[in-house]
Every structure is written in structure tokens, then in C-alpha cells.
Amino acid sequence: MNLQRLAASLTIALTLSHSPAALAAADANAPSPAPASASDAYDPTQPVSGAPKPEPLKPDAPKSAAPAAPAAAGTDIQLPAPSASLLPRIGPVPVPSKTKSFIWEVKSPTNTVWLFGTIHVGKRAFYPLSEAVETAFDNSAKLVVEADVSDSASSNDVNSLISYFPPDTLDKNIPKSLYDRLVIQLVRLKIPEAAVKPMKPFVVGGFLSVVEFSRLGYDMNLGVDAYLLSRAKEAGKPVEELESVRSQLEMLAGMPANLQEAFLDNAIAALELNRSADQVTGMVNAWQTGDAKLMAEVIDEVNRDMKLTAQLDEIMLHGRHDAMLQKIEGYLAGKEPRFIALGSLHLIGPRGLIQALRSKGFEVTQK
Image (cartoon, rainbow, N blue to C red):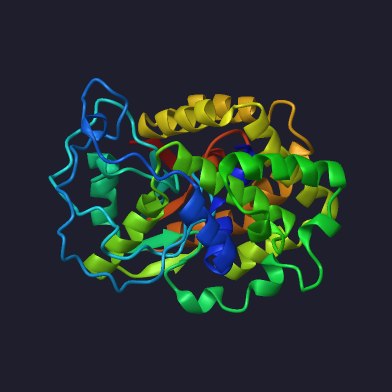
């Protein structure tokens, strides 16, 4: 999995919810996450988010919430809210963590906002989140997410963005050598070729990421974004957006053909090089311990030898920051505290939002 696929995880997940054949293939053929075991329980010697394992879900939990779709971890692009039966219950009171969390408090003369870097997969043992995160959420008046994927109206009529019109198909739009490499991975992952043929390259790249996360034991329906949206609904907390589902899809679909090919090529290469497990583990550990430096190092390794990463980063990550920053500055000029949840990669590095806010004179403190 590379940086761009991490940055695209939310939207890719959404596209799968509108591609029944692909979603069915993921559900039927991708290995299921490992069942909860002692290894999922809270262990204070391990780099977890500082919370004991929540109570198990009630058997009669409601099953009528918005439809769920898988999502990839890391930054940016989320998934429709899973049904209530899939969400972790808000269990024991979070205990203080001995490490930092991936959250920063930002203060202006009139207001405070919290920037929380998320990953879009999870395990039940992740919840509740650390005391610093849960307290910041409770102290906020509104939740701000990149895109509220629980709003089904925002995801209507996206088929033209994610799929080819018949008889056009993926194999007719990318080099044969790239398609042949893709087929090898589909066979390995036991995914029918027909399931991905209608998809555009950026969707297939994200789809491979979704399947790989499932194979590594992460539950795509227990992502941090879904948990926060559920908490906001439960608390009656208003939800706002930095972007929208459709704008994210349009951004991805609007990439030139060579960048979409590079995006898919990088996804396949990560599988061919057997990098995914180490990359996933590194990112999750960095997130759980609030280690922005480690997160950056993991991403640097992810990008090594990948194609057109600078151009992809500009479109899918850094190029979106000016608009996000403008909204965050607007919040800081007001008086309503906000909890802002967005992909972790948006926060870190010299072009990340944390550095941008510091350079503008705001008081920024990691909690």
C-alpha cells in the first residue's frame, strides 16, 4: 500500500459501495479478519491507544443504519457509516495513556479546535480511544470530518466517475503488461477478474488495498471515522465537512490517465514486493503512539521506488490543504470548539496542516 492509496482510502471505499460486483468479490473471496482473541485485548506493554477492550456487542443490536463499505487505513477517504451492529460499543472509561495520541490542540485568542489524525480501519480493542482524544471530543461543540459518508445523498449518481460505460472495460484502457500483472494478483487473492473489469484504475488500486487490509486482520467496518460519526450521532453533536464525498471522487476520477495508471501500478507493486504487512503495522503503531516522525518514516519507505509519487501527492494530498486550512482558520476565528478528524497524513511533515497552523502563529500542542 502506498501513500496515494492511503490518501484515497475513504473515497475508494465509497466507490465499492456503488459497485456490487466488486463488493461481493471482496466479501466472498478476501480472507476474513481473524476473530477476536487474547491478542486483541488491552496490554499496557503494547503500543495501543490506551483503552481496555470494549464489551462485546449485544446480539440484538440494531441492524438498520446506513450501509457500510470497506475502507483502507491511513488518511483520507472514508466510508459510509457501518450499521450499529458493527460499531464498537462505548465501553469502559478510557485510561490515561503513557504515550502521546495523534491529536493536536490548536488555540486562537477566541477558540480551540482539535486536529485528530485518523486511520480508516480498526479492531474492537481500539475503543474507546485514548483519554486525550475522548476528552477533546466531549469538549467540542461540533465534529468536523473530511466527508460525511453517512449522508447517502452526497454519494448518489457517482457511477460515471468510478466505472466505464459498456462495452468499455479496464483492460482496454491500461497497458497489457499492467493488466497482466493485475490478473496475477487477482488470482492470488481469489478475486474474479470480471469483478474489476468495469472499474477505473484508481478504483481498482483502492480495491486491492481494501482486500489486503482484510487479509491482514483489520476490520474495515471498525474504522475510526465511523466510530466518531456514531459518537456524534449518539451525543446529538452536529457534523460538518471539510470537503464532500463527491468532490473527493471527482478529484480522483479527474486525474490524468498516466497518474491513474501509476496509482494502480503502485498498488500492484506493493503486493508484488510483499511490503503491505510491514507498512500497515508501521502506520498503525505510529498512529497508536502518536509518533508523527515514525509515520513520516513509514511513508517515505512506502514511496520508495514507486511511480510518479510527487505528482500523485500534489493532487491527492498537499493540493487539498489550502482549502482545508482556510476552513480551519475560519473555525479558529469563531467561538465554537470543534473536533476535526481527518486522515493522519494531512497533519504531518513540512507541508502538513500542523506546520501550516504553527507558521500562522496559532498555538499548537500535541496531547
